[in-house]
Amino acid sequence: MKSLKHLFDSNAAWASSIKENDPEYFTRLSKQQAPEYLWIGCSDSRVPANQITGLQPGEVFVHRNIGNVVVHTDLNCLSVVQFAVEVLKVKHIIICGHYGCGGIKASLDNEEHGLIDNWLRHIKDVVRFNAEQFEGLEHDAKVNLLCELNVKEQVNNICNTTIVQNAWKQGHELSVHGWIYNIENGVLKDLHTCVSSKIK
Ligand code: CO
Image (cartoon, rainbow, N blue to C red; front, side):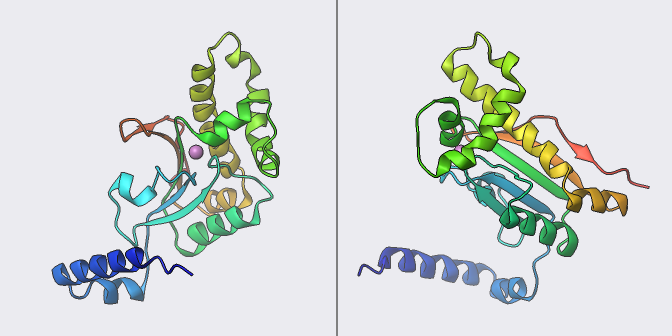
């Protein structure tokens, strides 16, 4: 069996270069994590949360799935949100989609893809909720529009979870942001859908 030695070599080089600059780095980080941000993004390998935001290990708690979807019955995503909000007490939740998303493209076509079609169903719902906005658009424009509308829908979904609602009721400082990333130029864009708690 192949052991993927090049990845272990690369890891050893990375760990020693960090220790060279900052000998206490891993000791310090191992004691606790205190990220201010929860990132919910797409699994796409081109959209790594830490790299595109310049955040270091320990600075962002991450959940990724195909199409950056927040489903009300997804115990995996909800558990991440609960831990991030109630235990880590993150101040910002970022839902980040990206243009050219394969999950979004697949949600717009009528082909069968197997099991994943059940997951994409949630994104197809976003098309149904906003059907009139898609009328008359070219295919690429439809994909881009759905990439953005899907982020806005997931912002709504996460705001309506009991976890975020309770955090706001208890007066916690917590904002939910909707962003989109352009894989063609590496630039993040704020969709200006930020929802915040009322700070008393
Ligand atoms: Co994607």
